[in-house]
Length: 126
Image (cartoon, rainbow, N blue to C red; front, side, top):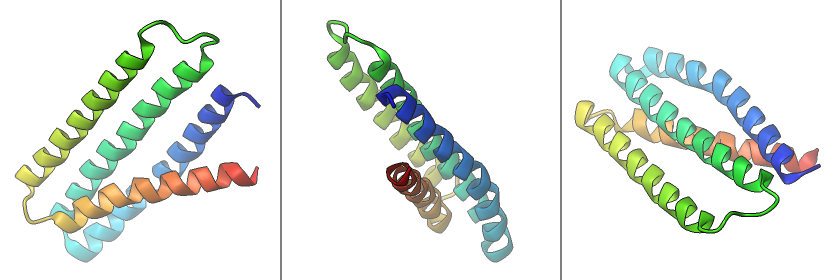
């Protein structure tokens, strides 16, 4: 199986688990901690999961090329820095809007990280 196909299968597994975990986690936090914590979770989860999705698209394209174009490494590093900056600005915005809802933000960041690890572990068993 080619590297590009593996990345696409990994992305599909990750997005399917996110599609189940995002509403479930939101509902649990809504019932346990209230709507502000659930909103912070939703926003952080979508931001981090979207960041990983965006990164996997770029990686898939890079792995799909037979020859890496000249200057692609520099563009890749600039894109990595740009997405990191966007992620940090997004998280800052969430904390600015909902300053007391750190539990929701932490779970919103940690959830996709755990799902990313689970999607990767599932790939090694195939």
